Length: 157
Image (cartoon, rainbow, N blue to C red):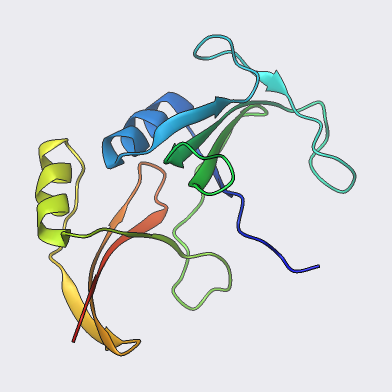
């Protein structure tokens, strides 16, 4: 059986409400609140064999770009509270692992201006590379927990 699609990417965060606000300003919308009935309410996790112990408590939500649960791009934000989440050190460029989340936009300059107006810090300016028979422009920035994010505009030759 072939894999159909990527369901979601899980990001561990140190402050769930701050991350919900940040990603909301990027255009992500709350799709599922995994057990919380109020902000700050924790859920018990039962992640299954080989994963973290079920005694851990966490806050968790799924955010989406779109509203079709089978076709949208989703991220799951999870904040461990017992034991508490700890920030991780910056990942070295040559270190194996996931390094960034790349999101496609149609108008990179307009999107950057809009996000900066919403208080999102994007310190650099766009770069351009040739690839896949065309060009792409991109800019890199970080979320509040230091996850590297990328906005990409695909251009024709």
